[in-house]
Length: 392
Ligand code: TYM
Image (tube, rainbow, N blue to C red; front, side):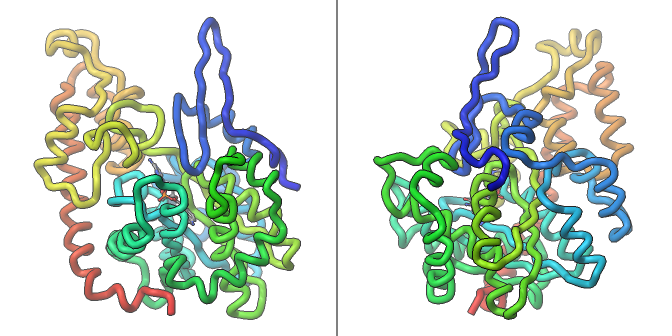
């Protein structure tokens, strides 16, 4: 059994005189996230220099999200690379719970997935969990989550995945192939395992209790289809790890490999550097959607992006700002400024007071709008391509 399998992922952090709570489950992320603690408690491994050097051997340049520790944890990456180097190619698997519009946080693991597909020239299976979002929502109908799956698929295709090597599965529409396999997984999972992994309880509906078996299926579906074991690598943010910890426990019992994973930090909400950007947040204004207009982006950042700057122009000039708690700087570091030299200059200028908060925000607004302009153009074009991407 994987380390720390039986755990409720709610911790109390006691530091000098104060208690901070954090909750990290696939459906709830709250409080100040202590990633070091998550590494220990989830039993994932930190991505270290040795592993980075190994990945670099296969790529011209390491992706900046790897260099900067945005992708910070993994499971079994060394095994995956051993197999790859022996000629046993892996496939990529990632997904989306289609509960609403796609936001910038969702895009982070997809950018890494795209880089991994290009770098290792591998296939991708992308899962749309319309069943999950229906089971776990009080408000959404199955028709709505199913419709949203196809809307969100446009964002996935807009990332530029190779159409010859990428397939999108929609759980309820591909149930014919998925359900059989999910049954085999479900038979190995007890209610008590689900309770302790996800915090579900007697009040949870039985669809919620069953659901994790559906998320396990794409991790071995290519092995079933190709009639031989194929290694799997799953890029995701750390909130999804409980699903895959369970999957890793079950798959060897069914004769399959354990999936490997590569895990990222959360892109924070606009309103603060902790927690995660999430559509279920109190205010729509703390989230940037892929469909936002340039005006939306400008308004949201100028009005809501938490600033590490000083309250007045004079104080900022004199004392400088704090980029480490500044959301705009963090977005540049985690997502929008790949150039290390440019990022360092922004860091120094902001910290020394040479750069004002307004200027920093403007850099970010321009970057996000340039990204969204391209993304929205690709998203429009995806409407004609979607048929090629759907799993049949
Ligand atoms: P979902 O739709 O909640 O999230 C999709 C992907 O985005 C990641 N994510 C984030 N990453 C960085 N910053 C954020 N603020 C942020 N918010 C979400 C999630 O970790 C996820 O990788 N059950 C899943 C769907 C799914 C899946 C998968 C995800 C099915 N199979 C395999 C990853 C891998 C879900 O509801 O994801």
